[in-house]
Image (cartoon, rainbow, N blue to C red; front, side, top):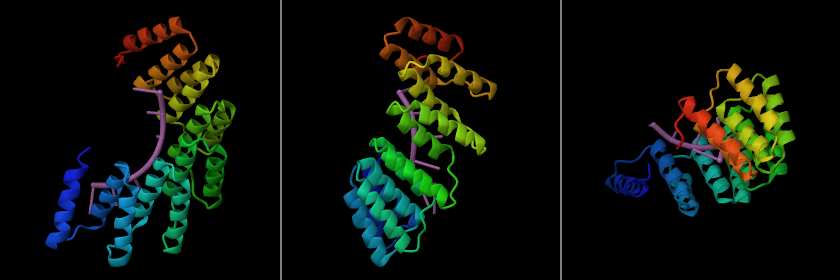
Length: 232
RNA sequence: ACUAGCA
């Protein structure tokens, strides 16, 4: 909640007082370091855990993998995944999803896709988060057709697109001026009871504006207000 | 009580 420094103070104080933090607390501090941009400090703590405990868990590793992914050190993220295997901690769907989302964030769609395939080869089932990460990554690079094929794939497997999946897809479609397909998707969303939210509407407004269709953008704004979704 | 996805 933006109060990492006080949390860290308490953590250090606990360590000194002999009231030892448990593994969850360690994981939270590691996550805090990562989110503050100090993956190096997170690693120092992690190494201490390897030496004197408490022993890192799957969540500890996943937290660090994510930290490296967000920071753009995909090589380190991969190294950490190898390390966890070596330490008897098998990567789970979260680990793979973090890598997928990381590769997407940095535009490495090929690598993201191969991690996705590797995940399935390992018998792990991608959920909406994994699909959405990959769909969003491709949409942001204009690879809308591939993203659409992923939506089909997930539906075939009984993993149904949720609000965030649809929003990511709508973003791709509207940026590529594929408005008919965007409307089609909006129709499917309505059938499933997925009512457009603020992100949905502003995605459409943004796409229309960036393509010079401001008159249609205004129509969307009218509609969102009419539907009881206040424009922010 | 701790880790991953949308404007």
